[in-house]
Image 1 (tube, rainbow, N blue to C red):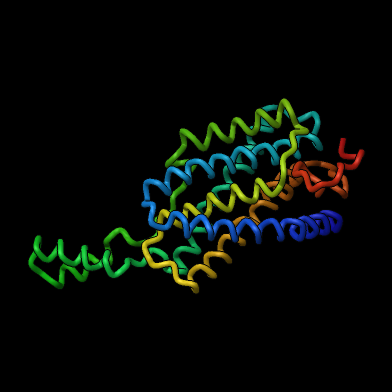
Image 2 (cartoon, rainbow, N blue to C red; image 1 turned 120 degrees about the vertical axis):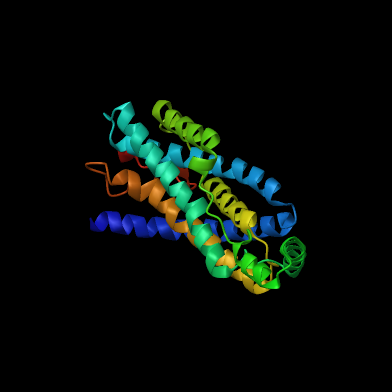
Length: 253
């Protein structure tokens, strides 16, 4: 148990520099696409969130298959799907949503309020009704769950990653790529809900949200979750499928 805790702590430390850089690129994405509109930001979310699911499924299923060599395809599907879709949803959707709520990114701009104010007064002739309708207008953060609302893209992406891991369990890719894809997916979830002006204070808050949304879930998905189901994982199991620039120990083969 101590060995696993030490391995997880070490992996969290390894993830931090990549995640800091990824969060910075996420802020750049938000500045570039802030005025692109919800439809564009949703389409970009539909690129990066499924890509994150594919990569998470490959890592989760590959790590489990390599240490539990006699596992069945059904068990691999269950663990790979939950580990990829579940954790990617937390990383790209749930944690950004809570961050959006705390930071108030969905507060309407002055122009939004002015436009909303004009419509209901003409329709209802009552300023009191308009004040109440401000609370109901669509400026609150909305939790967008990809595997439900975009099921036709996200769920096949998870299956693709699992089958890649099943047939090629030693597939490797740069860890920085996984972090960047996850961060960009989280960024565009935030942008789908952003109506407020991106002030310096808000950008700092979003940076912290992006870092947390990627850092912990990535480690949970790639390491902690699959190893929970492995009966005897070696102490160096933290050296997983990401390419950190070092060759893998022989005992992992």
